[in-house]
Image (cartoon, rainbow, N blue to C red; front, side, top):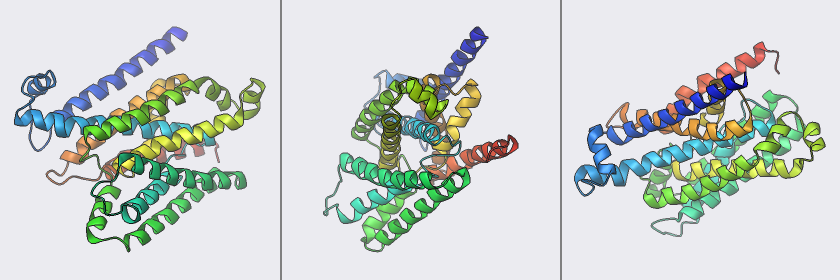
Amino acid sequence: MRKKSAARHLAAFFVLLAGIAVCLLLNISIGSVKIPFFDVFRILAGDGADGIDGRIVWEIRLPRAIAAMELGGALALSGYLLQTFFHNPIAGPFVLGVSSGAKMAVSLVLVFFAGGAAKISAAALVGAAFAGAMASMGFVLLMSRKVDSMAMLVVSGVMIGYICSAITELVVTFAEDAEIVNLHDWSRGSFSGVTWENTAAMTCVTAFASAAAFLLAKPLSAYQLGESYARNLGVDIRLLRAAMVLLSSVLSACAVAYAGPVSFLGMAVPHLVKALFGTAKPILMIPACFLGGSAFCLFCDLLARNLLAPTEVSISTVTAVFGAPVVLWVMVERRRDGGA
C-alpha cells in the first residue's frame, strides 16, 4: 500500500509539473503574435533576444507567465491554509472576504494616498493589501467564535466582502477620471503589465511565505486531527493559528496587490489537488497546492488572453467558470455525506 501511495504521489507531482511546463510554453508562444515553439526555445536560450519576438517574450509574456505561476500558487496555498484553519472545505480568500478587504485597502491607497505620484511602490500596494486582508480576517475570526454553522460562517464572510466592496465603490466617487479607469482595470483582475521588478518582489514574498508554510507541515498534521490531539503532542495552538492567519493573508494580499481580486482559485484548487493525490497530508498538500494553483492559473490566463482576442477577458471571470463548479461539487458531496 505504501509503495502504491508513493507511486501515486510521484505520478501526481509529475502531472502537475508537466502541466506547468506545457501551460508555460503555450502562454509564451500563443498570443496576438504567434511565436513557434522552436523560436521560443531559441529565444530563451539567448539567441534572438534583441529581435521583436525576443522582446515580446522577455519583456511581456515571460514576466506575465511567471507572475501567473507565483500568484496562482500563492492563492491556492492561501486557500488550503484557510480551509485547514477553519476545518471548512469551502473557506477561501475570496469567499471569506479576505480578497475584498485587500481590494478595499489598495483602492484607498490608489485614490487618497498616491499623492499625485506617477507610480506607487510595490511595497506600498502589498502593505495596503495585507492590512486590508488582516482587517477582513479579523472580522471573520470574531464571527467564527460566535457561530458554529459552516453555512453561517460563509454567509458572514460574504457579508464582510459586500461591506468592503461598498466602501470601495464609495471611494471611487472621490477619484479622478484617470484614477477611476486605473482602479477599474485593476479590480477586474489581470496579469497584464507585470514587469520583472514586480516579479522579483512577488517572488520574495511568495517564497518566504510558502517556505514558512511548509515548515508548519508537522504541526498542521496534528491540528487536522483535532486541537486536543495537537495540544497533547505539544503544539502551541495559538501560535499555529496566528501563523496560518498571517501566512494566508500575506499570500492572498500579494496576489491581490499585483493582479487584483481573483475568484474561486483559492477554494477550488486544494480540492482538485486532494482528489489527484488521494491524501490531505500537509507535507504533500502544501507544495502540491502551490504547483496546482500555478498550473490552474496559467491555464486560465491563457484562455483570458486568447478566448476573445484581441479583447482580454478578466482572469477572475475565467477562474470562476472553472472554479465555481468544483465548489458546488464539494458542497453537494458534503451534504451527501451528512455534513452541515
